[in-house]
Length: 348
Image (cartoon, rainbow, N blue to C red; front, side):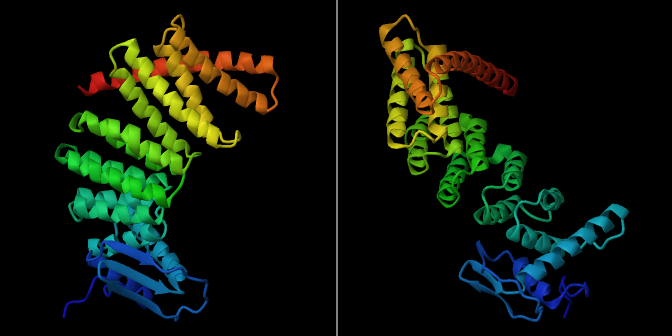
């Protein structure tokens, strides 16, 4: 019988060989690494078993095996640079997956997997699954999201609206598991912004009114969620036609934001940063000479001013600071809009 890829490398321990053989098949859609404790006994029992669609790897020597895998991969990279290596892609596929499942924040290993993809050793669908399992291990690392983004960019022409909706559902699932993951929210907005042409406008509105609201109400200090809502609000504002529409949208947004602010302690920064953004949008889109518009802008201003007062800052200093802040944010909104329009013109 032909030797397996792991048996061709005698320097690989029996325990690591067991793990790599289990990973090699791609028959699993979920992965569970049972929490382990430190052990100096490398002969401790290691168990790899497939239960339905979940691959379970359990045992105390996992830390030692992981360190061994790191050393082998490091030697492989050195040999690769010298041009002297044995290219058994199945072995390096399994080894790199094991490294990433234990510690997803490894850009070097993700870059190696790009090579496997570009040489057609691994399909893009399988790589998305590998990436998804790594995200379930840790969704707060930029390296995993950057790799997923890269995969999608290789397949831009074949991406459908259904696929985007499934990606957004995955993001919603991960938001509940990993609080305050800015990289997750940035990826979510990148999806919507990059493929907005194939998404119905009703879908964008639902993302704005329902999805982002639910996320913020669950985690009121999640800056990434406010960033996402800020982007959606800008998109909707740029697609309004009259000042009546601008006022209706901004007034509704402030009413909702103010309800969040009333629920929280004044030490939370994210809701007030978002309120500053609303104030800047009001300065850009509304007419201060209009009494309704002025009332809205003053309401936002007074809330921000009250927050500064509660932080025991001098009232005059606070007013000057808010005035400067509003002018700065006004310029920021102009730059964001200009850059966005310029980007879309180039894309077209």
